[in-house]
Image (tube, rainbow, N blue to C red; front, side, top):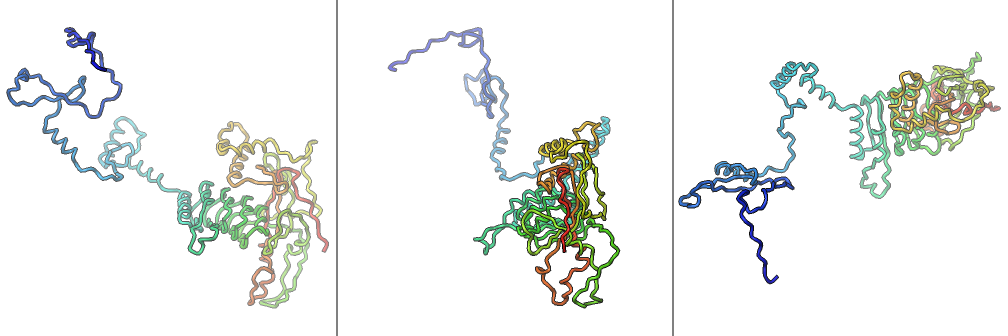
Length: 506
């Protein structure tokens, strides 16, 4: 613009003592005040107009609506000195020096006495002494055996150590979260293995503990080659043991096992790598054969020691008595697996209660050759393979993460067996579940079960013979007894039963 227009002049308002037309407006704070307040000076002295002598003006700090006198120059110099102090190095302060009496960790003896006396003075008798709270906190900070085992597993993962030794750790249980990180194990390559696939060969040692159950994640370790469960308190092995096809050594001795799962036979096939199996000592069920009152004596071709005559065990004759059909891969050449005998069928109702069949004691009678499985008589209801409503409900419950808490949600007047079967469902889910050995269907509560004795031993042709004692090439009574292993089989319905036993003509 070529020229500026002048602004209109405002008249002086004596009422407001300003040039404004109305009352003074209050200042609206749209934002919080700045950290450094402005400083103003005042001219209250009447002689300020003359400036005849040197004087110091009075200073104020703060905004115009909230002013306060500025400190004198001495204090200002001190503030400047503090401002120019050396900067603190950037490091983590583990002890901030702030007193926090709520946690009770930084109190002295005097403060403890004051707090205790103050608590008694106000009538607070429930307050515990600080020393006792400190002791309780120390007890809580002590790591549990499973936490120590988890730390050991993490250390092996970091170092690439394939041998995980958790023996003698006082373990009573292992969760799936503890074992799951082993699925991501990676070997540390050496100079000679730089151009080869790094497939780990895990070795897990859990001996000399107090384990009663095993987690399902343990049987998902595809690269597990050695598993030692010796000297524990395991009473039943999960059927998922058959999934460990790369297992080379398995030690189950010194436990409370009375039978093994039928799926353990999958480790003896030609698709498995198992070469060492330790099962004894254990409290296995023994087969009770009919006593014919005759003792058969077998002649040995070698005359070593005290003689060459030894009695034959009843299993020796029963080994060729039956024929059984089993689906799946062929047996590995290093193993000999042969069916020997079985018990009568145990029939269970929909709640798992025994309806018909033998009671499993230490010695169980074997079934007759002419035995044909006959289910209990039902009231005109045709027997089918359809699951019961309780079985369907338990399958639905096993899929929810709230399964461990469902028992607490039941009414107080609910039957006791509901709490029992829910507890069994929790254990079975954590161990990997079960499948019917006849139709391969998943189930929670079995409807049939029976025990089969199988001869499991290494082939003498594959074993290395001793030149010093050729008698070791022959089987003795102890080898025959230990080779007879009881295997539990379970079905999902009353129609899931084994075939009739057939005697071979020899």
